[in-house]
Image 1 (cartoon, one colour):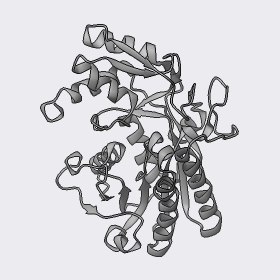
Image 2 (cartoon, one colour; image 1 turned 90 degrees about the vertical axis):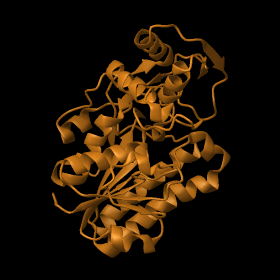
Image 3 (cartoon, helix red, strand yellow; image 1 turned 45 degrees about the horizontal axis):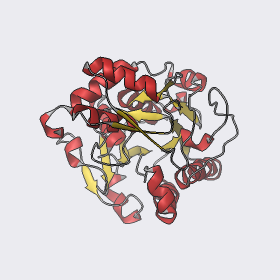
Length: 314
């Protein structure tokens, strides 16, 4: 199914969702954004993108959103890992029960395809140099546990109800529009915000933990292709990363080079549920998409810093 209908983007006024909505529009595919605006911001969207302010878990919110829709991109979530540790019941509702409601909406309104945003956190601490989709999973936090349960439920929905589903395991996504004021925003956004203000940055642990940082513009391309080019994508799961990793001290070095000064670094104890090392095996992504994310860390951080330095973010 490579349908030409609209695409419903849950959480579409948020960080990743707004990039997905913009790219859909650029490709002449109408995005319909469904967002309760608890963390999303309408200013992230272009003015002519339809926005339905409601909870994606309410079936009553769907009659307008679902009209002529050919796919759902499910990005709405409670993504702050530490929040989910402190409020696990809310995490379960936002990160798993909501997914069940979306399956029901797809069934009720005849939307044939769901693209589901999962996370590399489902792997846990594998002790391996890279994570492959066939590896055993060991989610360590309520966020990762609920996302993993969502993956399993989407697999059930595909087998039982005949829905087309794609599960994308995002690695560490960064870039413009990630809220710098949130204490739970991505580490690169937090670093950027503090460095621009000449404040010390905080690293939890020794700084040698590694991450596969993937630029949000590349992620949006993957998501849009998965939503609109169904025949090319298996049911998943599929890693979405660069296939490379860097440690946080290396990241500090790139920031130092871009900003022309060495930042102050403060170390704090490692946080509960933090994974030590993370790097995507991207063979399956390359087979489905025909490519892998190409934005270098330096170029992506440059774009992030430019966005952070715009007056609207100051």
